Length: 26
Image 1 (cartoon, rainbow, N blue to C red):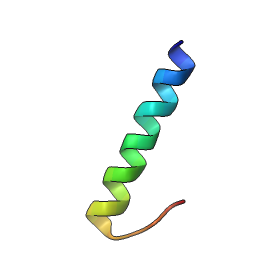
Image 2 (image 1 turned 180 degrees about the vertical axis):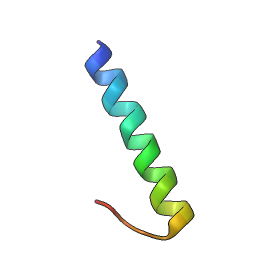
Image 3 (image 1 turned 90 degrees about the horizontal axis):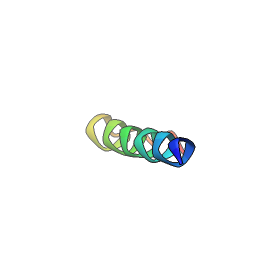
Image 4 (image 1 turned 120 degrees about the vertical axis):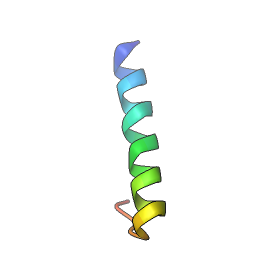
């Protein structure tokens, strides 16, 4: 559903942000 899609996008954004800035938010 749209919730799964939203969570997926959020996870990808967190992954990209953490890898580009070198910060682990999880």
